[in-house]
Length: 467
Ligand code: NAP
Image 1 (cartoon, rainbow, N blue to C red):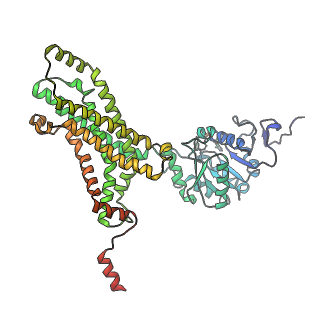
Image 2 (cartoon, rainbow, N blue to C red):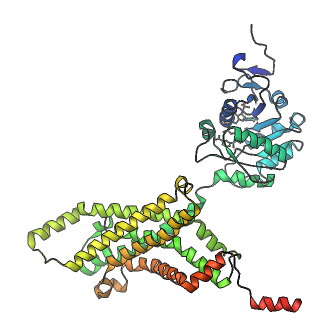
């Protein structure tokens, strides 16, 4: 027996595949990429699904078990409608106002760039159909992510809306689909949610700029001192050193400064709290922003330190090194210098230790690892072991310099060597940290961090006068 087909409703699949009547029906407008992926997950989660389409008889493929209808009929068959249509085509929804009144409309739309329209898409939709309850949701998930189901990286559905019941209905569906819900408040938060997918590594911008700036500075500084100086002063062309030995000076220098910049804001914050005598006053914006990008600074520092290790291992097989040793071998041997042996071995050993701890810091900042740590464990690794890493890496650089700062020949064109420059910030951070660790200072800071506040004598006298 053939299935009865209403003129405006087309079931694309056999009746056996269709859902049972007691299943909750959900409607999706639009049979495009997102509509299809979302529909597939809704069906897998046990919902009955109807699509509203401009062309119910000739739309693209839809998931098995779904029905495709005209917008009018589809809207009437469900109390919740996902609008999976681009915002520029929303006009047609105005004519559906009678069918959509009182329904929950889920706006999933995004824009191509920020501030494209005067109001958020969800607010515009609410204006078009004032009788509906618009909820902004699912726009931060891609069609691909929906198709593959929630993964570690993409488990959250952000939503906002003015009607609590409507938000609750969307939250229930999201949870059934396997997502966790983050309520961002009223519909006025819609623009913020619509800007989410347009973000391009916002938290990496400052660390990247800093890295590029420092790398450029050290590169040109060392190029001038090492390569150009040799050419101008001694007529030697050692430009080939740019590729290995110069790069191997730039990477550790920038890495050490970035690592110390991870710890400097914490130290500055400590001094701020000591000076103000309270932890309840906000830090200046620049310090807040700096603190928020410490993880990124640390990861870039780790990447550069890894390059330094790799280059150091490669240098013994570089052309120049082999040639140099070949020439030395054929000429003369120098007497064994125990001090020099100690210096070189300590330099490598401390560097290796520092790098090992560096790796530990990087690993513990991975969400899957940090989630498994208690707050105390995390702060022990990031703070105590972090300072130890900074100490080892700084000491490693001091060992590299050894007594070379005493030789005037090191100050080519009256400039200090690169390793001296890169020691300034980490040494400062370690000294400031040591100051904070002095028992009297540490005691005051700990009390402030536990909520104690130093009373302002001037304020107190004013208060007593008023009383
Ligand atoms: P799409 O593949 O282009 O599909 C949009 C659908 O809208 C079309 O298949 C069509 O369905 C319908 N449509 C097109 N023109 C229309 C018109 N003039 N009037 C009425 N309906 C029209 O787009 P999409 O990728 O699915 O995206 C849909 C919405 O989801 C967009 O607002 C987008 O910003 C948002 N979004 C997409 C993704 C993603 O990964 N794709 C992620 C997050 C959010 P019918 O032919 O069936 O009518």
